[in-house]
Image (tube, rainbow, N blue to C red):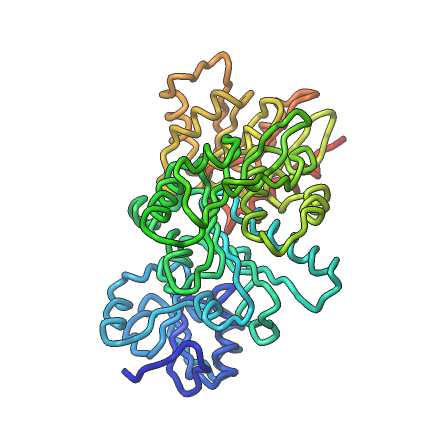
Length: 485
């Protein structure tokens, strides 16, 4: 095939767009504006696509739909939707013939004139992404400059359509999933991995592949600095390799260690640490370089509850270091209410407090949510099975929950794991199984008494009953808002 550069407009280049999702429809418009010859391929039928199919064809897009949508994959450039594995036979055969396999996000990363600050991780990446964006946006507004901060990626907003308005003085903050990173061959200027715990093992066949996908965020051309979690076993091991085998500047953050020396037993040039320490007047987030510790933010000023949110602030502070004044960090910390569906206070009814944490789609997320609350809640768990072990969830529930209501496809699996947990006692942790989501929510409401907390923290994906976690969270909120006073 003819050599194609992704840095230049793809005029006259045949492009296959696999999957007609949120990010790929704007991608198609961008490719058409450049004069590319676009074929859109999707497993959905024409009937399922409805007006979208008609609109695309009217714009000159060739459609290949249905179960055979990947057959005769002959285009020069293939844009993969994040949910489609790159190793299906039709794609590997096309790449072997010389096709370029890429994605909407990688095209943006290759073309953006603005530096890209990117975040990935199993937990906390959306909050960290929003924090970093708020820090930059607030600072730019205070400075009264023409600089702009952009946010997008896995949070649902495509960045590629806005690349034409960006300048090298702006900053783009991008959340990246393992699906997006899996075939990525370009890194952002600055990268954060918040943590790596078992997740998406229904798509990734093993943890090694999942971890390798995450590592693509810093493994390629463009990277200038990486931030990792010193308290997470996987990211701590990655940091050790970076320190020993590369000269990449690195920052490690920790919510348990209290000095640079604890985090970096062996110092090398380019290492910095972010940690919290109480020097007698309450905990303060500090930035240490081995010689000086610079105060950044009193921990008490952070509005969001939980140690996991302390870590999210540490990650965002590291990512935006050098761009943000300490007073801006304080301003954002005191006002930022958090992101919807993440320990979101819904309502207090008859003395019972209801929290929506529908984003909690893994046991580690639920454990973090439980640790953030001051009292033991009635927890609603269960959903789509991602093949993640539930033993850590059972341990967290036994330690931190007042009662559990199990629902969805994984209800029985979680129930069996709870019964097998050495810490489980039937008199200390009542368990109710209610397969229907609405009935599960009402069951939790029915057992709650004045002073109790009810927490939706599923520890599972939503796909057994809802198209995504947001729809699940909104259904929970609707049910709670309709409860009588």
